[in-house]
Length: 86
Image 1 (cartoon, rainbow, N blue to C red):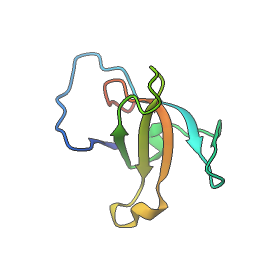
Image 2: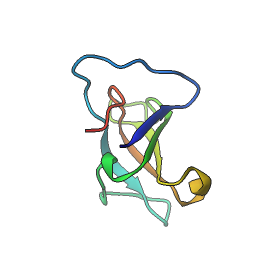
Image 3: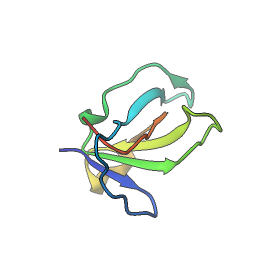
Image 4: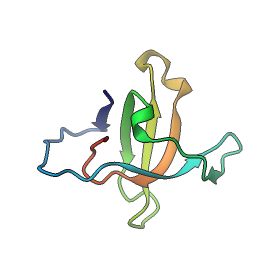
């Protein structure tokens, strides 16, 4: 099961939550591309910055599988919505 984290804040579950959506992935060339895996593919999904791009589709999200190897994580631009992974 994927654990979702909001940096610096506790979240409480909502009824009928809207799931996290990924839109763009930051690749090795430091460019955003359309190579996207589902949030459920990762063990940890963290909201780094809400409205990072000053648009409704611009939350900055960090994903990784092993908390001891966060250096292997990836960045996405997406919609955090209610912080729920389906």
